Image 1 (cartoon, each protein chain N blue to C red):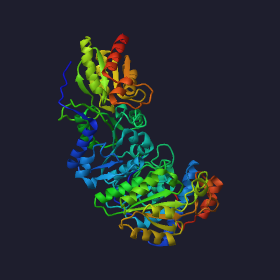
Image 2 (cartoon, each protein chain N blue to C red):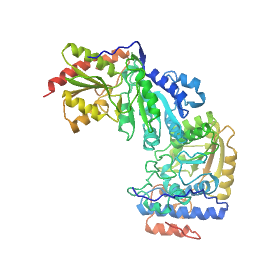
Image 3 (cartoon, helix red, strand yellow):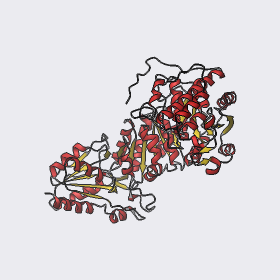
Image 4 (tube, rainbow over the protein chains, first blue to last red):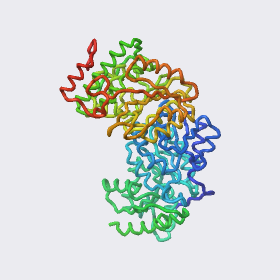
Length: 318
Length: 297
C-alpha cells in the first residue's frame, strides 16, 4: 500500500475559494454570484479583488440561477456559490430549464454537501444532490476529495464549455493530492494499484478509502483504490478495467445509495461486467445534528465501513 | 432534425416606420398563429394574439438587432427574452418574418424533429431563441443577468423581457424584481402582458395580483402603462420606456391587452389560452385577419 503523506488538513470549500480567486486573475470572463454565503463559500478573496465581477444575490437562489444563465449570454462564465442543498433541490427547475436544457455555461458550485455539514442537521445536509444533477442530460458532476483537487477542479471547469455541478464540503480533511496536479474532467485517478478488490471512492470518502486500504493490508488484502472525482461523465474504461482485474467492487460516497456514485457504477457493471458490488453510502435516510465525525460513524461512512464492505464483497466473488 | 438552409448573407433587422405597415405585419403574424395551432390542434393562441402587436413593434421597429448570422451573445444588439414561453407561436412567427429563419419552417411547429418546439428551446438551435422558457417565472432573472453582462462588456444596448400577468404569481419574479432595482439594472425593460386571464379563470380571482403599478414602484422600478393592442399608444410608450433607461432603475411597462385580440370569438376569454381552433373556426378567424398581400407560409 502506497503512502499518502500530507502536511496539513484543509477544507475543500477553501480549495474552491482559492481556485476561484486564481480564475479572477487569469480569466476576465469569470464572474461569481453568491446567495448570502460569501464567507461560508470562501468567496471573500474574489469579492475583494474583483468586486465588479462579484454579484451578491441575497437569499434568492432561484434568481441566482436565472441571472447566471443570462450572464452567459454575453460570454461570461458564471460561478454560483451556495450550500449544496440550495444549489440543487431548491432550484432544480431553474437549473433544468434555464441552464441544462438551455446548454448554458454555468458552474454550479456547492459547499456543505452531505452529513459532514454537521450540527445544522438534515434540512441542510443534502444527500441527493449528485443524483439530481447527474440525471440532467449533459450535466457534468464533479466531487473532488481535498483542497488541492478542489482548487484544480475549480480552475479546470472554467475552460470546459457547458454546465457543471461542482460539489465540495465543510470539514477539514487531509490535503494529500499534489498541489500542481492537472485536473482532467472525467478521468479517474489511480491512487493505489491492487489485486483483490476495487474501491471506487469520491469526495470525502477518498481519504476514508485510503485509511481502509491500510487496514485491509494488515489483513492481507491488497486493495486497488481509485478516486472517481467525476461522477458524470463516468470513467467507464478505468472502472471496468479495474473491476475485471480484481473481480469485485466497493463504492464509497457521502450521498444516498440511490442516485449516487454506487448507483452509476452498478449500472455500468450490470451492463458490461456483472460483478459483485457493495456500496458504502447512506441507505435511504435523512441525516441529523451531530459532529461530522459522529455522523460519519452513525451513518456508516468510516474506513471501518469500507473494510466491512470489502470483506463482504470478497466473500461474494466467484 | 429538419435541415433548413441558413441564410448565407447577413440580414439586417427590418425598419418599419409606418403604423399601417406594422398593422399589416401584425395581421399576417396573427394569421400564422391561428394556422400554426390549427395545424397541430395544440398550442396557445390566446396570449399569442394578445402580444402580437408588442412583438411586431419590437422586432420590426424598436429593437436594434441582427437576424442573420445569429449571434447567441447578441453583442451590440438589443435582446428580447420571452419568459411566458407558451406564447411561442407569436415568437416564432415574428422571428421568421423578421429574418431569423425561413417562414416556411413555421409549418413544422410542434411536430416531431422540429426546431419549433412547443415551448422555445435553444436545444434545437433555432436562431433568435437565447433561452428555453415554458416553466414560468424564470425569464426576468435571465434578462437581468444578460443586462448585467452587457454592462460588464460596455455594451450600451437594452434587454427586453415579456412575462404573463398570471406568471407574476411565481415567487422568482419578485426575487428578480428586487434584485434588478437593488443593482440598478437600468438597461432592462420588462413587459407584463396584463390580459387579466389565466387557465383557471381571471387573475383577480386566482392570484389577486392587485395594483401592479404600486407593487413595482414600491420595488424601485419605473413603471409605465400602455394599451398593448394599439400601435398608436404602444409605440409612444415604447419610446418613453427607452428614454427612461440609463437612469438607475429598471423599467416596467404594464401592457393591457386582450387575449385573442384580432379574432372576435377568441377575444377576452381565457378559454382560448391553450385551445386550437377547428377547421370552421380557422376559416372564420382568417376572414377577420385581413392582409393586403397574403404571404401565408
